[in-house]
Image 1 (cartoon, rainbow, N blue to C red):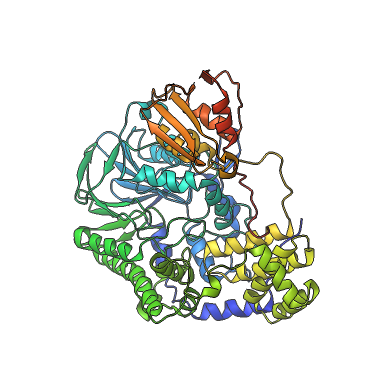
Image 2 (spheres, rainbow, N blue to C red):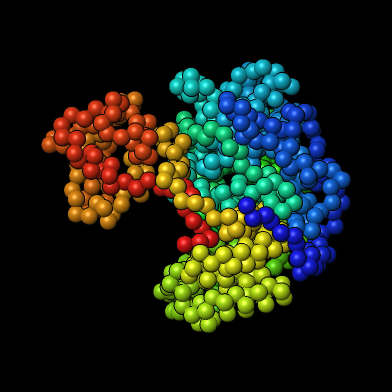
Length: 627
């Protein structure tokens, strides 16, 4: 296996120059991140039932105290990595506790009259269970009395079965979420789940070694856990700002913030604790307006507006501000100052992007020119550890003006393989292109190398010299990146270019775990994006579906190569298929096949078999940096 290389002299110079522009480090953030520490578990290591580690902070020991920043890591990202390495149970204020860095996100526990209200049960069940056990060890063996999902991203709901039992869920224990949570969670993590999941392996460095030449931090947190992920629907939906609830003696005032960091999100205030939870709307960096793993572009203007509303509603009464990532702010003045600069950070990116767009600048031009004003640039918590000014400016442009920059030369461009062939020919052949690219590499012009050699890689992925030179260029860009996701994208791409993955006869299915736990309506809806229009062609199919685990009935049809489902309807002449939701998911991803004892068909089974044959199975390991 080809190994990573050292930083070049050009990269060392670039990082030295970058360090000179950073704010002064007073050590205040390191004091904040340690405040209220109670305890942790050895090495932050969490294993699943099979004994395999799903989370292990010992793999980041190379970032410990006394470890200087290596020349293969941006010094600003190194600082953030050190902050995100401090893990365990912390007291936010009396009655409110967080377990941080047991996963990408924080899990928060609020002490009620009889038990714990849980906020955001992490990505997977094992870390959530370990966090609850740590809380019980130090604060008492009490039951969970309710769960709040702050928003519709998987790192805020996927570990719910680590804090709630199946019996708790069946008995309808309160799970509170913003209105639209389920629809958005399904849309983001299931409808586009395979593509997003594959891209997330790049964004979070899941395949990289954890060392100074590999994954050091995701900016938002360390990385993602690898345990059991579930999607359990909420039982209470919050639709209006000002809604009040009391759960086990805990008073909550909600602020709904749709279209901000997530399409369905909410902040909330605890009057008896004078504590404000800002969900993921305010964290200790510049967040993504567009996330490189892929998701809907966020509304930077609305994001800023809702932070301003939170200031008006809650800041004057807030003694402590905490969030779903990173560390709290204590004191009303500190909380208000933090909120105001976060508010203005997103508004600035929004307003300045559109100002330049109205002058006729394109997304690429705006992204190159945009810089923060001195007052915002002076703060560590406005830096691009996760989002960047560069790709966020492009996101604002996209939201208002779309992907097209107005230049008709970009209206109908050749796809990468066809464009690559033409660029290689233009360069005078593969050898000539590589010669020019190597000259650019020697000058430290790694962005141009990556753009140029990408054409040859797509024209001829078997060209090992091209793949390796492209990997070398992307690697240096990764070493220079302040953003954790940018670093991870660059370095993962370099690794895959140097070590191409052999094709698999049994492709891994993405989003399979969440598919099984979907409500019936959302499960059927997710099948519509699997229907292969070419295979379906002119076929017309009608099948009655009866889910034996829920008692629900649906008519499913295919017509004009489009999949439809209709709740509560049946067609008289169509076959009726009786099965559980889990059995249907297993049929779709190929774990079982017809005939099967778990699937009963009343009538002709051929239409149902034809329907299944029209559904694609998505290969999680599709190529990204090669055709």
